[in-house]
Image 1 (cartoon, rainbow, N blue to C red):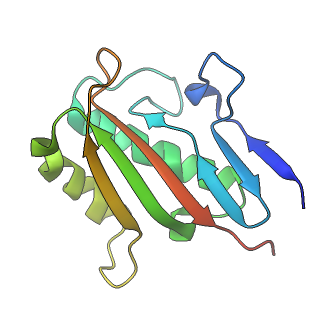
Image 2: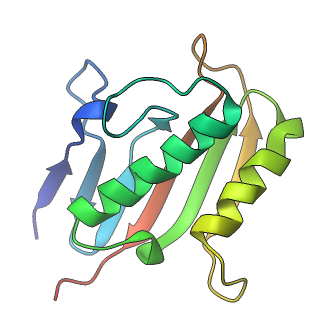
Length: 128
């Protein structure tokens, strides 16, 4: 069982760090900011950044051979925990079934300029 890098151009770190890594069924992302998965442009506000971050997670897990249904845990780094209402609205859209949601941890911290949120995820995708 080897290690496989997963790259999404929009989330290139400008360093030799992949967007995610897969080892067997385990998939772990790097920090995914609120950038458009299509253009790499940062969202104009928190709502757009949260939406882009979740879209990015979805694309990464699809590229790894799965979907957001395979995510087991999401870590959210935000500049303000007071913004969780915006986060929760997107959370419920991406994970609508309360009986089948990933675990989540939100941490307030300073992020690079203009970045209001970053997400990281851990998932398990069985090969078909």
